[in-house]
Length: 109
Length: 115
Image (tube, each protein chain N blue to C red):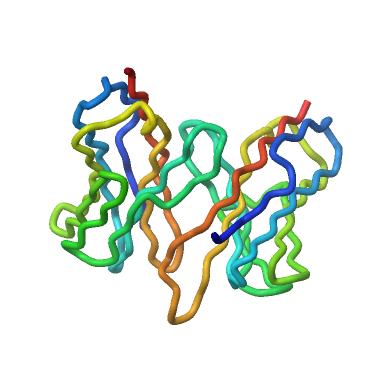
């Protein structure tokens, strides 16, 4: 069946460090891919998305490219800030949503 | 701004109590969902509804029921709360049809503690 696997956390970085959170997926069709972010005490909100292969989603300095050949959708940011501390969820949608288990990011000043 | 509102942010209930979690969306979305979020387990779908009075079981429906009497409102019911239902509950909604982007819009969550 369809599924999403993302790297376990927590990930702890210093401010201005480079961030990568790995996400791979298994899908029987051609899904849309998403990254959601959950800030402390809040619900999830959409960070970025890509609907077809080779699409790049971007928002707030974060980027992820839909790689069909490696079935991946890794999240990257060139320079993280303390305000980026949150839990990040990778997800795919193909008739139904499948979420990864979430990766907690802690950014230290 | 689009909005999904969950009526209670924090609840504390006793074992055996009946618990109602309410969710309202103002986007005229057809689809509404209830998820449960637990550390290390991510989000697990409890129930969803694609129309008024329609409901479908998700991955973990046991111990829960739902009600959707109006398009904008989707309620999650714990008939007899148990300690293993202590969790964060997230409501979400999405559109359907030709304009469906697959995006889910979430409420802020309801943290339930069952003692």
